[in-house]
Image 1 (cartoon, helix red, strand yellow):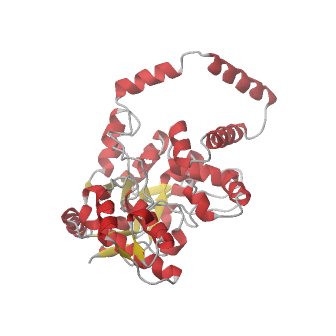
Image 2 (cartoon, rainbow, N blue to C red; image 1 turned 90 degrees about the vertical axis):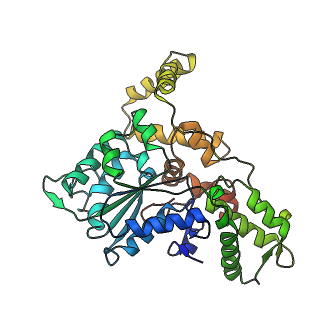
Image 3 (spheres, one colour; image 1 turned 135 degrees about the vertical axis):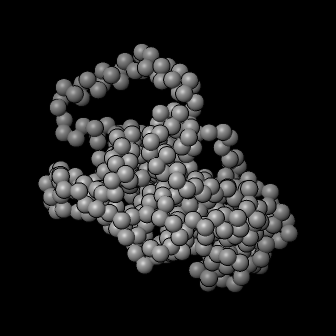
Length: 387
């Protein structure tokens, strides 16, 4: 059975990314063949698919099959950084380029020189950063912040997104010229529910994986549990399946997994696009700027803060908004992201930056498993990347 996994999966326990892929289903086998076709090229590649379908695993496999396999593979999550930080991280900076820049630092493009740069959640980049990224792709060189000297780069770019970029272009949330620059070669990963032949091989793989970690004997799926796995829509894709197998192994009796041992979400896959069509977006934008008592009160509060001339005011306001929304949503990161209209990765990164996740875990006695059950996730120890 063809199997692909992320490296050091034990360190990614709280990640939302898929950590394994199999290619048993006919649709998956077709994907594997397309990967083999695209790997030898240096063409920019756009990988699309829902969260948890294995986009980073695919990108790593493409790198491993390419002539760049002996050079760096750098994975970056564009949605996990603020605009000011992601520019510095992408392109690097010189000493003194901004407050706190005490040394010069190469960006991710330079770090991946000669190899492959994987930019996950490319659709989360702001429009100004999209312009700068487009220039780098056209000129094949980067200019660090605080410098005027271009640095040549030799990088294959693989971009990934769970957003429909064509609709984002129509909604004017993504640049059309950058879309065409990225859309040289494409690879669409179907959700797990559309490749049912992969469900049971993955389930057995995760059961074996966690049995080894827990030091328990091998577990088997009953016929009833198998039927329930095959009938579930898997809105969380491979990551949801992994969590279900981990939980089942913890609670099953006699090393036999029954339907009662499966904790499956009642959520359903999203229907339709996540980006409103232009007319709806325009209508929403108009309705949002109509003066209301709440908007008037907010404006008054902001004006009062402006009068005080406080340092780092934008950061304080952003922290207050995200922290308040997070608590309003009972510390559920996904609901917080939906409420604020931003990506979950941005919410998670900001909460970690503000220390909110650490305080919550401390209040719960440090139970990482309980925290993850409520939508918590720790920041990755490396440059965030994940699908």
